[in-house]
Image 1 (cartoon, rainbow, N blue to C red):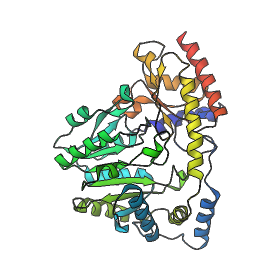
Image 2 (cartoon, one colour; image 1 turned 90 degrees about the vertical axis):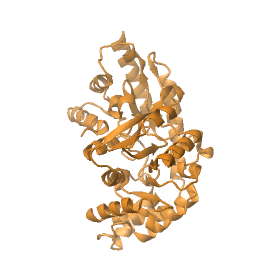
Image 3 (cartoon, rainbow, N blue to C red; image 1 turned 120 degrees about the vertical axis):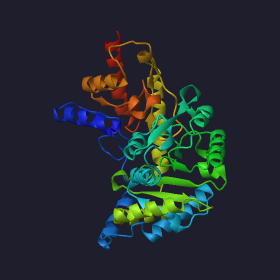
Image 4 (cartoon, one colour; image 1 turned 180 degrees about the vertical axis):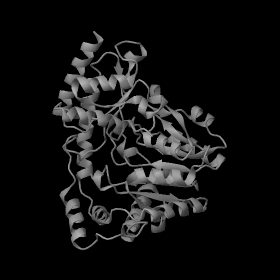
Length: 398
């Protein structure tokens, strides 16, 4: 299996060991000091330390600490208009483990899953790992990366086991519009296919923040939905590996799937227990850290867009949320420059300037001739990056 986001880091780390300064724009880790200036709030760290001192260092319930499950159910019900109970919540080691659980429970040899293209690489890797086939439905760059409903509908087959939604999307940052969500809900109901909703970036939103509605609140029906979220991004706790799944299943259609996933959770014993108690504190006393982070990211996004507009042969849709840009390298379409593809471009850029981004083809067929970069660093660092980037383009394209 390949994972472009991490694979590129191997080369970057090797260059760093040789003394080259690396600008880490490849990974969405807001609390990595090599990447950004954000920090885990002190009160969350103190809550984790207090939990450890109280003795919450032993194995915990495989499905999650009961009090945290209760609070997550209340929060999801409030935010998304659901009627979840604690038994509908399962704690995971980040959303990555939730992805693994869903793939393991729903995919058998020859099955298909519908994923957005460009697509976050683990969805491809896990589908392949279990003998399935990831089928990408097109996000249309000419329409601000909104999903193409006709393309989507044409790719549903009898082999489709679930439909993945990811909004705000990784890598494009797009928020799916309500029309598409309603259409996708109708098709899922017609074909009796469950939805899997990756909502990890749902609190990192810009212009559309006040009007944004989640998938479930838009649908307002009995569709079976597995939601995935966590504390890594919005609460600046990436390394703690704390996520969760919820099962919205009013008609009990996913009872067996839920039981299978719970069995997998028991096999891996439990999720980080002190971190779960810290998360309880986070939910009891939410602070301003997410709002402050979003305000800073908004300014950094706008700065990056402004700088990208300076370069001939590059275009970029302005993202609605998350902290990624997914620019198009139009000069590759035009056969300009010394590179045969986007991967060769990204590797050349890294070796020449130390700027580490991710090649777009690592995000599937609709990512070809693009690259993904984060806008997590402070503006003064981003200024260095774009100055180097501009000099690199001028040298290679002249």
